[in-house]
Image: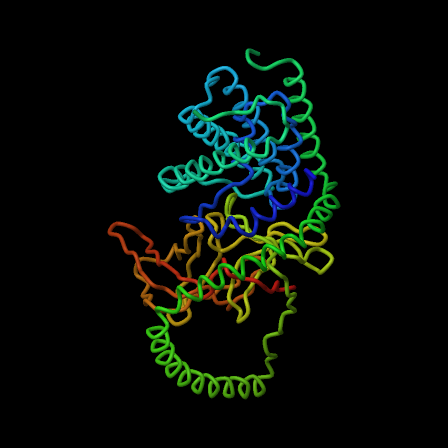
Length: 170
Length: 266
């Protein structure tokens, strides 16, 4: 089941998400899902739910392979840790702040890793430019906030793990 | 670590170790088969979503295009008349060219073999890449040119697996292709502009290029033959005290709506 959902998510990301791109920046389902899963309060979270879709996506579309998986895994762990120590009251501003921190942290992980792989001629480096700061990053933050809120809402609605400790908005 | 229990910390390091191991396997070329399996499983879903995308966005684009149909029709009629005249002249030139080749004993340009590939997916999140459903088994190699129907240059192959490949679009910031303008024969380098368009750079400041000129590949890049059509110049940017000028180039094809492409096999 997780595998099927992962494949569906990968297909969605590769076919339909590019249609929603603004200024060439498309929503990132994987990052939105990872952030939502990290912020969502539940004791029975299974790491497979984020690891498998991210790995499948990376195998299929990642270039160079490994950058997305490792960056998103670090983002998941870091955001989950922040959620548990800083934002125990998971209300709307806290979720938005966590998404912002998570998005920035993802870029911080992705940038040196991509450039490191590029040095080995395994991919193309990320070129930092003004466009990246005034357009790409704010748009990525906007998309991730919308996606994360949507995924948290879905997780609450379907009560995926049925453990009674679901995240509630105030 | 405060806020994280021991088992979660162990999980984190175990999965991190697995990822690093997978990266190592990938460097050794051991992930080709898993990648092909993922593509094999995902391909039906990619096609299904592709059909949905075509249905939904195709219909939407049709209605959006309706309002500009009259203006576009008039423009196309004018363009058609101009092109008819140009085709007649070119046919005459081609005949002369063929006759001269025969007299001089020079062979014509050898036609390149093309492999048609379906665009399986597009990922603008990590750069301007798209997946195509042909790979090493079909004779594809890294750096081969990818074109749309009509010899319109689209990009080049940057990663090849057994049954699928990744192509880097010309509009990616990391794409850099040597080009030449068709009429004024001015050389330059076409680079991507964050997926938003393409720019021809490194044009000497005193070179006389014209708006509306067609830009072609110059054949100086490995794997990219000359005379593939890149686009049309729509704007020229000249700045004082600079030794180069640049030009905005608009491609003739919409990369996002590509369904089939051709890979030029050497």
